[in-house]
Image (cartoon, rainbow, N blue to C red; front, side, top):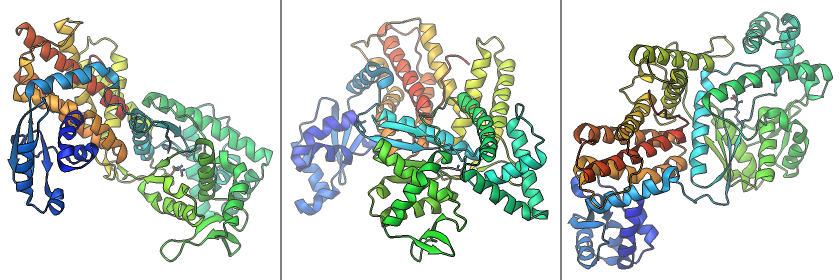
Length: 565
Ligand code: ARG
């Protein structure tokens, strides 16, 4: 709708003495199409003009010279309602969508600005559980949305590859690991060792001291500790990368916590120099007032913490990338951590405090309830992906056994279903994993959207018309159902902005579901192939535009759009 808002705003702006941008931003889409396609509320003008909003609206309606795309203006209450010309609407939308191709919706809002996005960040030597699924797919989608808006986006995986748990891993490996080179099922083995450690430490608390001692050795650069750490690191990362490949996700940097170890001293010095630290029971802390617990930076034995490494990472990122924002897509239960970091930066008087944005999300729940790594009831992301693809494979074997490239389609649809299920609802809502819901081809799912795209592609294939120049006569798409699809298409650029700015890929998910629904209604009511030429051509152009926007929208969510399924 932006393009229409701008055309109306150009004419309306001088009459209300606002900048055209402000008028465009004030234009709303009325809740009911009977009230028009766009509405300008006059309430804000009332105090200045000392007139009632309906009188203002009437006066504006009389004086306004409407742009060609507006067919009619009506005053309803304090609103000025605009009805777009169906033919002009069709022409402008289809031209915009088809000419821009996959670039439709891209903008330059972020030109020259950099955003660092820290997401996924699983923990080394632990399995990649479904708990890390939302951050992984949300982060990927948010990166893509900002990229579409012209930002330079730096994707960082802040692997959990440092910390006292590595002391525990080393102890467990030395005690029960039997020198295993971890060539087979490394993650499973490491995980079992991790679980065993936590069972045994209940009985033998001295294991904890041993673990602490090993972590100190690791921090001090002890070669034996380092060698084992490297082994855990290598096998885990190799495994994680396989999962990322499957999800079609990549990173610019895999700079985990260990990357900052040699940058910690300088970071600590910087915080100390700001005069905001205190020593409490031998530990170095930054007191944060009555409302927040102090931020612990160094334990009495000299060990550093998660927060210390995050501060070092913040300084490093600022210096290296000069970002406008650093976005952390991390579970809600780490809110306190990010609040503390932000406050430490604020106390230091650094503008970096404003750049830090925590984007939280709810929990992933399986029918069994919440999972815990320690108790060893973790559901692996790999297993979920495996299950999804094999279920889709079965559906294909049953419904469409002749499908070309069945394997690839099963992968794209199965993985797509899982990704979409994570992005369908507002990110703060818990995600409940119910397979029937994830894979329902008729429900609000990834496969449903992919299927709608396939439907468009199949119409275009059947029509066999490669060249689709827009005809002069667009009467095939001026009726209500087609117009609804066109209006929806025209919203796509604003949806990208909205989804990015609120860090809510679900805004895009919802939009695509609406678009698919509008399209399916059109498809079920309007014949396409076999109509007179102008009608057929204009309808095919609409189908082509829908396919393109669905494909691009799915890509922004991280889903593939197969041509057949
Ligand atoms: N590894 C952490 C976890 O799994 C997430 C790290 C998030 N990023 C950060 N810079 N703290 O909970």
